[in-house]
Amino acid sequence: MNYLVLLGVLIVVVGFALKLDSILIIMAAAIVTAITGHMGFTGLLETFGATFVGSRYMNTFLIVLVLTGTLERNGLRHAAADLIGKVKGATPAHVIGAYSVIRGILGAFNVGLGGVAGFTRPVLMPMCEGSVESKGIKPNEEHMEHVKGMAAGVENIVWFFTQVLFIGGSGALLVKGAMEGIGYVVELPKLAAVEIPVAIFAVVFIIVYYNILDKGYMKKYYGNKSKSKADK
Image 1 (cartoon, rainbow, N blue to C red):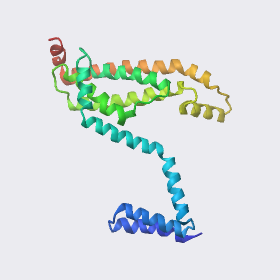
Image 2 (spheres, rainbow, N blue to C red):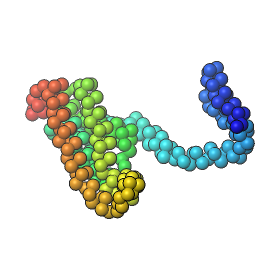
Image 3 (tube, helix red, strand yellow):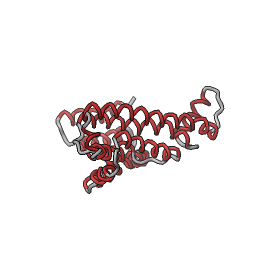
Image 4 (spheres, rainbow, N blue to C red):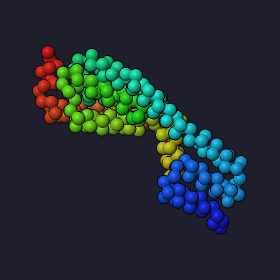
């Protein structure tokens, strides 16, 4: 075994112990490991390139975060809140329920909206807050924490059950591979057909459940204030 390649680990440990620049430590460790491991500078660059290309989905995620932050700074949250504020009688559960239907339809076509970081936080949550403010009351902080949980739950649950409807999608291929691994032959069109009622039930169930849940939250945190002010 070539123990010299462990010099890279030693550089990382010593560098962080001395609180040196982290980028400098990692680059120095990578170069030393490449040289002592007979990879060479060319091999090191090839490895960096392959890793960068292999992590392109992470790069896309970072781009979405930057884009979302820019839109927020330019009024995206206020525009979303103002929009839902014009809908009389809307509640956070109604907003989340409408989103779950849209999310389910798009999920069946393997179309994403940005997930929790790209859509739920910058668009859906302000709309939920706007639905409370439209009743003339200030959103309760603890209530909004519950709403955040419901919004994230819808994003995950609806996507989980609807992505299998897209023939050739990663979810369908995963199920096919797992079933064939234990001896069952699975055809993707039949798999999607079987999943349709399951996905519909999941979406309807989460809408009904969150409506019941949020109705209790509205009564707990705002009492009759929301109803009386909404009726004015």
